[in-house]
Length: 291
Picture 1 (cartoon, rainbow, N blue to C red):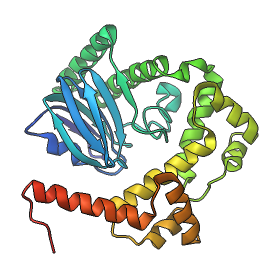
Picture 2: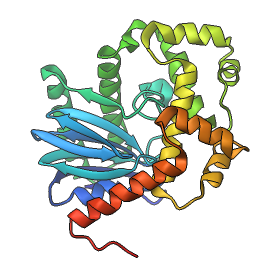
Picture 3: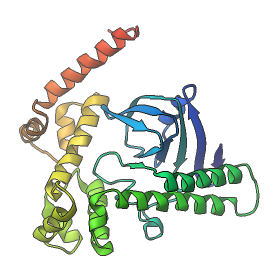
């Protein structure tokens, strides 16, 4: 079921099974996606990293995540674009910016307990009921249901991670830091830049992160750079020099040293490794490999 209006707002609410998983990869600009596994198990590989979702686990993805493979029995997908509901402009309503989306901390995943599952089942029923209607203020009603789902998800994520150790004001600073990293990581590699944007000292920011995370602000910046570097090496034909320049490295040697310190191999060795793995996988599946 898809809601679309003439000003490009779009919301998709879809039951998934083994026959229609291809639509998960049909991602458009500004799309944000939640996939709720309701089968026994879902195997999904994102940016070359495999994840196994148990029943009633939900992952949250943006347009920048690359899904390499997915196998599932049954799942539910909610996908919306920025014109339909902008999580940045409406962050004060749901608090999902920097947590469910644009978190610079991997792929967010939540697990529904029994009470949570009842809440989400009700939300799904509300989605399905409203999507079938064509009545006054339908978009407003769908946005309200979406906000309910996002708020429930944020509550679970904060409750089940060390994020709950932070006061609300501290949590808002952390979320804003994640968001700033998403916006500026290709050019700004130092903690001091982000601390100044938050009107904090680098030491204060580091102390805050030490309360709930084993990752320092500098680790988070480096990890975000590395995620983008791996994506470009894996999925594009761009040269290592071009990738390095896009990530703010004028000197390819500096980028190569950074990459090798994290991955244990140079960017070119990394590309060759995954090119070989891809060819072997295609060969095993019977797919003809282009010369």
